[in-house]
Amino acid sequence: MEADLQIKALLFDVFGTVVDWRSSIAREVERALGADHPEINGYEFADAWRAKYQPAMERVRKGEREWVKLDELHRDNLLEVLTDYKVAGMDAGQIDDLNFAWHRLSPWPDSVTGLTRLKSKFIIGTLSNGNIALIVKMAKNAGLPWDVVLGAEVARAYKPTPESYLRSAAALSLKPEQCMLVAAHNSDLLAASKTGFKTAFVVRPTEYGPSQDFDIEAEHDYDYIAADFLDLADQLECVK
Amino acid sequence: MEADLQIKALLFDVFGTVVDWRSSIAREVERALGADHPEINGYEFADAWRAKYQPAMERVRKGEREWVKLDELHRDNLLEVLTDYKVAGMDAGQIDDLNFAWHRLSPWPDSVTGLTRLKSKFIIGTLSNGNIALIVKMAKNAGLPWDVVLGAEVARAYKPTPESYLRSAAALSLKPEQCMLVAAHNSDLLAASKTGFKTAFVVRPTEYGPSQDFDIEAEHDYDYIAADFLDLADQLECVK
Image (tube, each protein chain N blue to C red):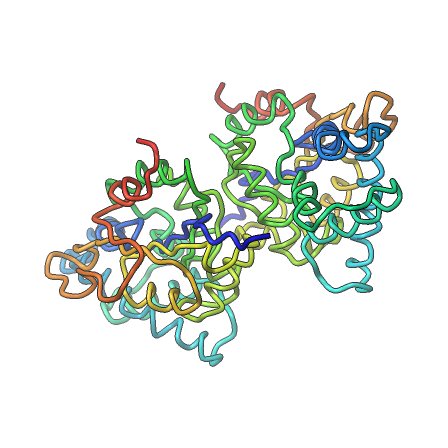
């Protein structure tokens, strides 16, 4: 048989690319803590929490910590941020509930419509560092119509390790070249492209707030560059 | 926190419970082989192919063969059946295409509507021995609206080993008691119940053809017994 290298699956980064984590977390933080701590700015708290994300995964990637789900890393990081903000007295259930704010992130306005169009022509799946339970609950809550949940937990490897991409393609019995990563982050796309994935950069210029000064344009030679998922669906000639 | 033991996820056996593998395989076999081999009865061929399913998995379960995806077991079994039927001369692409008939199985008439209703209230996922690519392609082809694909490949264990159920629940960060297996097979449900899963027996009395004389009634004390997925949705009070 001739090798079929057409794109079969679009695999999506999720935090920042599909959902607006910063506004969602800020809203939930202010709801959970605002009554007792009116001094807390939810956006700053969200940024502080997110800033601990890469270092926590890096310990797992380096083998300094055994594999754990992202929910667990998020919770450890939350405890640190609560200490930094001098928030005390929350019980385990309240901490879990705030931690599960990551299960309730809101999609960008074009995400559900765009994914639905893209799903008509391609397998659409997640290739996120989020664990399966997190991604499934987020999808139920936000109406994200995934065909399949892949990524870190299925691959047992956090992005941007090569294994995280290669094992996700292998789970679909596809070659890397038959998969395209869709992401708003240059580093993620560059790592995926090195494993053979095709790449689509979608611009999310306010993921980190109004003064974001990185990942606001494509820094490498991607297969597609799109303003949002609707633009990507247009370029990939998916039904309206 | 009080333990929450309400059912959160319905996890489905697929072959026979959600899709009618026997009629689908018979149809594809006759389409692929009928012109050159009018003597072949598609249903008998399907039964012969399926008869090799449990023995092939048993070798993996016993550790006599390392983990492989079901697609690979199906292909090995197909080669044996083709030899038994004295079918020769197919090339690798034709064999693959016939093997992927398992990716194109037709759902029972109530499956899509029933799953859509059940999805409104529960996480719905697969807990099948089918590999991820097989289940995803079947779902795309048949319109099965899964929230998540779990089961043998995610668990790296074939049913009915305890690990196949326990690791599927763990992937959702759920206790076994928060998951219910939905299946048409007494042996599958009994094994799941021993791990703590809740159980729902759905009767598929013609899965093995009109003279099926097993799995036509519930043989154990299940949480639910249903005539089909619509009946199950009624019993679980899901929206119409």
